[in-house]
Every structure is written in structure tokens, then in C-alpha cells.
Image (cartoon, rainbow, N blue to C red; front, side, top):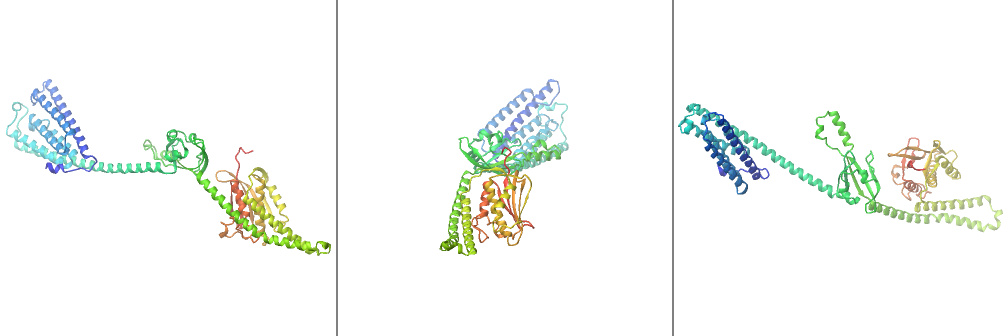
Length: 580
């Protein structure tokens, strides 16, 4: 039996250590219990109550033996015990024997301490589980049966024989006591064993859950620390609660200096507005260097604290919404190198476009130069008799020279504007007046027909931009629009105004035409340099428009409406209130 019980192993972590701890607590409970019993009987004796108890000297000796054996057992359990379960089973069997001896010494079937038999059985069930509890129940039942048997045989101490309130139970009564207490002992063993089993299963599950949680926590911490993106979290008051190594490396600020500090104080260049989104800023590091940081934030869904569980559901939902709208996680990256690479790519693309443009100009200049050269040679041969020359022929030759010269000048102008854009010099100007100036200059164009262009601009609409560059934008857009409606006798409308953009005010300018529109397959290509659907175009007009708009911090869009198949919209940001 001992060998079988010793092989019963629990699956909880450090089972031997847990059993050792439980046995030590049982030793302490045993000492306290018998000490209280001795103190109680001593008080009752002092008050003259007749008790069926051994003499005072015998009781003191019993306690001394109990204390010494308990101390020795605890010492052995802590230092030299190899089989904790076997030792625990022996100790509980000894405790059952001690309680049986106490019952024998205090009246057997009439003892007031009979109920103490259940204690070692319960302890065995909890510490050694079901098998240990059943074994102790059997041992305790046998010991109690031995007490009842000795009582029937009158093998009792002399002081019990003269006690008037203690008599020998009849055999049938003794058998009934044996059956009742035996059943109670085994029932207690089963219940305590079942409780211990459930506790063990709960401990196993709790241990597995704790291990999984620890692994997840370690994984989270490892990801949080090793990820290359900087991560900073803030609470509902925008105080920094955590900061990973990447954020510390990017900003150059040790995390010890930012934890618990307001976010705006530590990172004044980053503004966490109400709307979530991506933004960039120039950040000055503690070493004096400046880097470009791209950052964004999102709200954290924090759990409801335990103190809010008793609140009403409405109040809890309101506080939960406020909390979720306050806790934030901020991600940031050093984009200085990325922006430098993007700039290099743009420069390389621009140089490639310039090279392609140079080849295109060289090719396109051949025909105008040939026409100019031929016309000039004819005029030179007739220089001596110009007066007798046919006026119509003379006018035609001069028209060829002027037209081709203008064509070459326009190509050179477009090339210079695209290859070397001028610096922006913004100022306030009346957009309606600028449109009138552009229309006046275009009156001599072959595409310009009286009444073709109309304005839809409110009074006193002022733009903050480079006036000359906006003039260039209007010239290109109106030239394209007038060319598109020339064959269909359509209308062109120039509109402008102020509106609300992405979180801030904006100025917008539209050129609408009733031409055939831009085919959907060409919408992504019309802003590409040297792409043109016009036979006489260089393909630089819309490319120059987009370049100027982007230099102003705006964007250009293509749109369409039922009355106007082609709408080119320019959107420029409104200047800050501090702008004069």
C-alpha cells in the first residue's frame, strides 16, 4: 500500500514542495489544537469540574512528547526526507493513533473528543488526495474499533472505572457507533479527496494559463522592444505610460526621462489632433541634430476598471467611451533617409525627363527651322523687288516664320519651366483679375474664339500664391480647354473660390470645358511628362501644372460632370492666420 501510494504523483508544478508545505501547516495545526485542548481541560479542572482525564503530569508529558516529535518531524521533513508522501502518510497515521489514544484515555465511546477522528482523514484527503484519504479513513476506523473492543473487554484505565458518568456501552450500541463513525470517516475521505482533485485540476489549469500568459507577455515585450517602429503609449491625460527601444533610438531621449511625463512636453513638434492620421515633423534631437519623423496615432480600447463594475450600464458605457477616446498609441519612424532617397529618385526621374525633353526639342526644332529657313531664303531672293512681290505670298511667308518662331519659343519656355522651376514668392492677389489678364493675352490664339471662356468667380476672391506661376497654370489649362472645344464650339468656364479641405481651409480653381473629355485609360498618364493626346503638344503642360501645384503644397485633380466632360481642379492650402 505504501509503495502504491508513493507512486501516486500529482501533475502540479513542484508537487513535493507543495506537499511539504501542507504537512508543515498540519503540524502547526496539530500543536495548536492539542495545546488548546490541554488549556481548556486545565481551566475546567481548576473550577472543580470532574473530567475523565489522565493526571496533570501525564497530560504534560503527553504534550512534551507531542511537541518534541512534531519539531523532529518538521526538521526531518525540511532537510532529510526523500519521500515526502510516504512520510506524510506515516505522520497522519501516527496522528490518527494519537487521537485514538486520546479517545481511549477520555472514555472510549463516551469520550468528548471522538469527533477529532475526522481531522487526519480530511488532512489526508486534501494532502494525499483520494487514495490517501481512504487509507487514513480505514486506519482511523480500525483504531476506533479497537477502542470500542477494549471498552467491551473492560480494558480501561483505573480512573475511568471509577468515573460515575462513564459506563461501558452495550455491544449493539458499540456496533452502531462503529458503523456511524466509520461511514462518516469514509464519506469525509471521499469528499476531501474530491475537493483536492478539483483543486489540483484548477491548479493545473491555472498553471497552464499562467504559463501561456507569461509566454504571451514575454512575446509582447519582445516584439515591443525589438520592433523597428517607435511605439509610445499615453493615458487619458496624455501622460506617457510606455516607450520602446526604437522610440528611444529614434528620438535620442532615454525612456527614463519621458515615462510619466506629458507627451507635448517631451515631443513638442508632434501634435496629436482629434482626427487620426499620418503626419510628419522636424524633430530636434538632444545632440543638436534634426531629423524628419513620420508619426501617427490611434486610440486604445482600455478595459473597464473593477471599481466601475457596480455602476450603471449607461454610466459605465459613457466612461468607457471617454477612456477609449483618451488613451493613445503613437507610432513613429525616422523618415529622413526615406525622404532623401525619394528626393534622389525624383531628381533622377527629372533628369531623365529633361534628357528626353532635350531629344524631343532637338527633333521638334527641325521642322520649324526648315520652315523658317525656307521662308527666309525666298524672302532673301526677292529682297531687291519686295515691292513687286505678291502681298499674299509675303504675308504667308511671314506668318510661317512668326508661327514657327512662337512654337519654338513655347517649347523652350516649357522646357525651362519644367527643368528649372522658379522659387515660390507668394502674395495676395485677385484671381478674377488674373484670369482677365490671361484671357487678354490669349485673344490672338487660333484656339481662342470670342465668347468661348466664361468666368464663375465670386467678388473679392483672393489667392495666396505665386502670381506668375498661377498665371502659367491658367495659361496651360485654358489652352488645353480651348483646344478641346474648338471643333465642337463648346464652352469653357473658369471658377474659383474658398472651401474646407482635409481639416483646414483651401483655395480652389477649376477649368471646365465641354469638349470630348479625357478617356479613362489616359487619366493616369496625362500628368506624365511628354505624354500628350494633342498632335501639336509637347506633353509638358499638365506636368508643369502638377509640379507648380505640388510646390505650393496643393494637389491637382481630374473630374467630370454631365455638362462638362473634363474638369481640372487645383486645390491650394489656405495660409495660416499669421500670414500678413
